Length: 453
Image 1 (cartoon, rainbow, N blue to C red):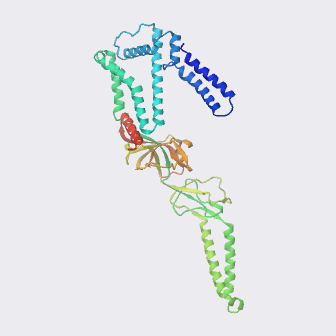
Image 2: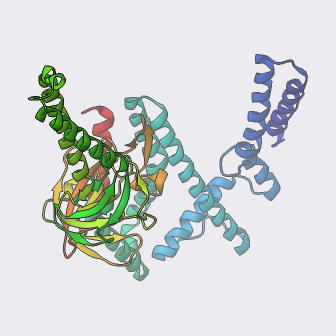
Image 3: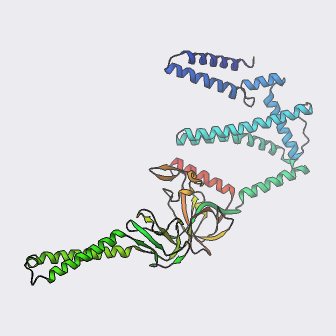
């Protein structure tokens, strides 16, 4: 009976489920639960599949009354493929009705696709779950024997029929497509390197208040160009004004006491102390006036004003921990390029930056390339957790890239300053390379990394 194995496993699963419901808490109950769940899954998902030679395959043969379903359908599918491609005129391996032949060919293709995906998944799993050397060897064996070997065997059959194939008119189209595919894969035609990037100011400075103060007036507007040292805001501090008035009165009193030394014995006995106190109060007054001058905020450099909140109003108190505005100068693009694309770039390459929020295309040029991978992302918006495309994770409150990326700086044409950073993508015209070369380089990089070369 084809379903004996499945029925046996289902019976075991039923008994395990009953045991899980009756046993007390402990390892035995957990084992019963695992046995019940894994048995159900393996029975219904794996054993019932007709694509592998398990119970489901034999049940399908019995239901369809088609013995040796796999080898017969494979032979029909290979024959049909050769006839479609080359029109060889070979006899059909088995005489069947058109309907039966059609579904058997479709079934063979479904089995091939299923096994290809399955073996590719197994190859990736053995690569990741074993130690480096063993994982690479098992991956190579899995790919060579189960994935590449069937293709090689079919190509060998084509080689045996080469003399007949080249005489058939229909073979010209498959051969032409094969030549085109080889050219597309082997000829270096694509040199564009794409990478996530951020357009931002080359120099950026924020303006803070030196101490808690009241805003008297904003002297600039958003986007206004200012020169270094230009006043941008005026602040008031009533505490400083009060202390200045108090020191002025104290200085007047001390000067009067010093001037009265000649006719007042009390002042004459403490003349030295009065003079020292006067020096201290004058120094305090100078410090307060310096603090008062600092209440007139100036631009730290020449650039454009930005980050100016429209909610700021005269009379509002400003904290020294909150920036009042910022001044930005220049513009550059910082792109983060994958390790595999880095060898194809060089300083001076032409590029284009395309912001996410606009359709505009800004021309650029590579100015500098870092030769050491970044350890932390300084632009969080480029990371996946913030909507970017660079895989990264948090570690000690820092964003650590999951893959090796290198920072590339680009200068822009026609952009003098940027007040608001813009996220986008940069396309760099690098050295042209073929798809096959790109694959070989990726494989070589993986081998070098995993083998520790």
